[in-house]
Image 1 (cartoon, each protein chain N blue to C red):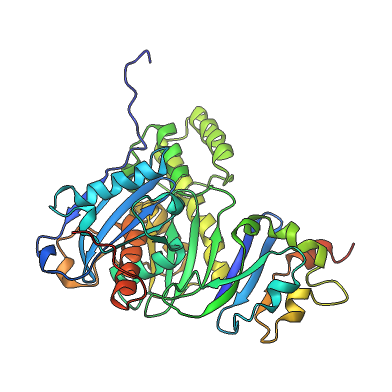
Image 2: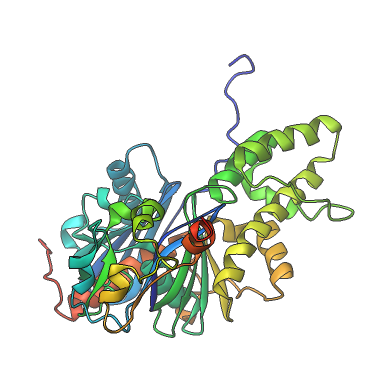
Length: 104
Length: 308
């Protein structure tokens, strides 16, 4: 499933999405995230599953817009460290960062 | 207060029910789910995957206390005690504050699972209209979450908003649905979704002498409109169901159906043997939690904590 972590407000959708079907729980994203926003743990939305997956730490979910902003998701020259580190390509950012900041 | 005790128009009826067809002593696995929401709390007891009893009550200012109250209601008319329960799972906003629970599960997973049990496996989209947030969930035939959208930064257009509104116009909250259709033609909707702004807008309308029922209709339409945004974002698939307290308000539900062009499923139990059980849309989260507990105990994923 597409697990969305973040929030929606008047300025747009601020989400990290993690595709739990692609995620292998390897933890590569956890080590590269400069804000330590990620962790690997039980799949919250499928409690009966045995597989552990990456997820955003609870404390970051309601401020993800600001946590992720320094990595310039979607509009920097390079992909963010977490997206670059994810081999199966399970992590993505919603496009609000791009819309809000790319032109500046 | 000068005119004596003021009537509390927001107060909705609390409920409790026990399944007369089940003898819990013959059951092997007894599990419970406690859903402590921001406005209401529910306790559900499941015996071998079948609904045994539930209690639905208001959440007070103290989460552990509300969880106890909800469970007490579920157990009140039975001779079951907390010690007889194999495993208990907490869910909802106050889930970390449920003293009798052994673990917690997010309400998203629980509502999908609960709706799957209550409305049947054909359910594909669940809209949970909670006390202070709303969530749209797409799920598969086993009640597993596929994706979801949540609106949790603001409580506008949710259950508590309806309660505040009921109090303001002095109409009991369960009469709002039927009264919103006693109008000549559909009025323009309340333009503010924010509860505070909507409140002042309603005050303005009352002062202009707009009929009460028109204001009720306008508020219901505003709420339906707000939920629409969330649902369009996620995509709605049939069978579409609504859980939570607002599902009991036909004024919002029918307007939402009209705007979406999709009917919500009828509020009847999927399993025919529950036909005498009141269909309480508010218990979906707690039902899901209790079913997860049952699945975990029977699969040996967790150990039973049963004392008696």
